[in-house]
Amino acid sequence: MDQLDARILLALDEDPDATALALAQRLGIARNTLSSRLHRMRQSGALREFTRRVDPAHLGRGMVAFVSIALAQTSAAGVTAALSAIPEVIEMHRTTGEADLLVKVVARDTADLHRLTDLIVAAPGVVRTSTAISLHEEMPLRIRALIEEAGQP
Image (cartoon, rainbow, N blue to C red; front, side, top):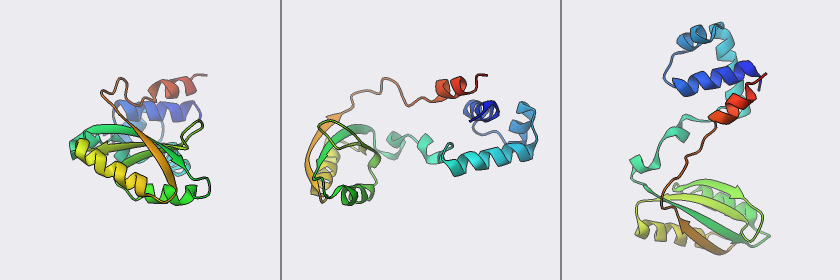
């Protein structure tokens, strides 16, 4: 990522609804340059999908929990596929330590969370789980400071 990419991302962060023409004018670059850079960032995965901006609470899933999962070492790929099929599983990370996977889930309430943990435990290769409910999001995911740092000369 170079300085121009960082400027483009910061401009999008400030005004995500801006048109390509307005962004290009604001940044002092050609619209084709902006479009090609945005396309390249989407293709490389630097610019992720729009749905990451949607708050699950507005979809009726206001409870957030983190499920630590210990796996049978021979079936990790099957577990990932099975958990990916559960819509309420919104993030999955392979980890070190006692758990092999850390999964972020969203639920309607504790009864719904119980249903989800039953689905997770039933996935092939899951040995055990431990669930922690988020009481309050102290700081949401933030990337802006990293983009600002990347854009420094």
